[in-house]
Structures are given as structure tokens and as C-alpha cells.
Length: 293
Image (tube, rainbow, N blue to C red; front, side, top):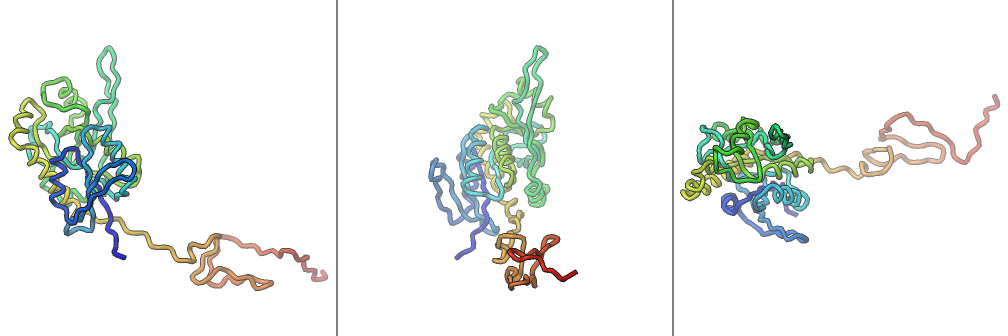
């Protein structure tokens, strides 16, 4: 039987992001969820030990959270990468740059009071294992910084939203609409790690439409996809747990390299066995021995 390669899920929100990743895969097969009809493509990534399950989820945090959970339970990936485009929030982050999120902020939590909005954000940190692989693979080639996530396309750097982000999430260097859903679903699942990789396609200002029309999105998506591939070349699968021996599967406290303890009438043979604690032998169905004293 051929060895099954470990799986990593790569999720995208836009078709152009999906296509940018698909270009790197070989021997691609189509998958359909048997109950919900969710589609995926699974293929090899040359030069790595991984098979990649690629899913185009669509836009928005709620969709991202729902479909991430579905992918986790359906395809059982060892890691989840969310790959796509984002708007830049800092002057030193240029169109085409790649940002690897060290932290994901959900920016829309808060309490509105007569004195203004009191922010109540949530945040998720990148998987340490995946972040370490990314730093090794992309050292000097990507920005490792937090990103902001909300259910809105930001195209006005002077808006109240932009001002609020600068005031309350000042270390965020990019903004997009899905990663908090992905990060939260992976966090709740508790096993696979998540890493967010974004290419900057605009500056989240009034020039967004002009940048998009100039081809910035395909450029940013291609750069993010190449960064994801570089990370997967660096990332190693988790060690496989050794298969238990037949003797380890026996019920009870006895573990033997050969056989379970045997009963020989008036004694038990424990040779080759390991006992977890003190042991007391008692006769069953026999009167106590009287030695005459």
C-alpha cells in the first residue's frame, strides 16, 4: 500500500488567490464533501513531503470560520495556511510585499457609550511551529507583523475606521476580511496550527480601485502563494507516533514483551512482565493455610 502523505490545507477567499496556489500543485484531484458539497482540490507540492488540500472559501469572517471548521473535520490537515491579498496600512509596506501575520486582530468588538466606542478586540497569535518555519523560509523577504481583520473593505485612509485602527491597533500593518474566522476556528479545533500569509494589493485608501485595475491583486496573490510554498518547503511534518505492539493493546495492568502473566495452579508467572505498583496475591475458593502455630 503506498504511503499517504500528510496534508496541509491552503485556504483562499478569491479565485485569483486560489489560482495562484493551484499553479504550484501537481497530480491534482477534485474532492467533494459527501454531505455539504464543499469542493476542494488536492495535489502534491514538488520537493516537499506534503499533499495540499486547496479550498476557495469565499469572502467574510463568518464564511471563513464555518468552512475552516469543515475542512478541519473533513480533510484532517496537520496545518492550515490562509493565503491571499490585503490592504496595507503603513507607509513602509509596499504593494506586492508579503506580510506573515504574527497576530490577528478582530477589530469590530466593542461597547458603544456616550463617551465613544470602547474597544473589546480579540486576537490570535500565529502557530509558533508555523511561524518559525516561515521565518526560516522568508527571512528578509516578508514582513512579520500583526494584521487587522473586519467585515469591511477599507478604501479611505481618513475614515473613522482607519483612524480607530491607527489608534487602537497601531502595530497592524495590513487589513483584510477573513483571517480572524480562520484563526478562531483553528484555535477551537486545538490541533492544527494556522498561519496567515498576505500579499499587499493596495494601500487601503482612495487609490484602491486604481491599484486593482493596474493588476496589483494578481501580483500580490502570486507573491503570497510563492511565500506559502517556501514555508511548506521548510515545514516538516510532525513525527508519527509508533504503532503499539500487540502486547501493549491487552487490557489490564500487565505489559509484557512476550505474553501476559500465566496462572499455574498455585502461582502466577510474571517473568517478562511489568507491574504498575504493589501486588498482593490472594487464594480464591481455598481455605486459609493452617501451619499449626
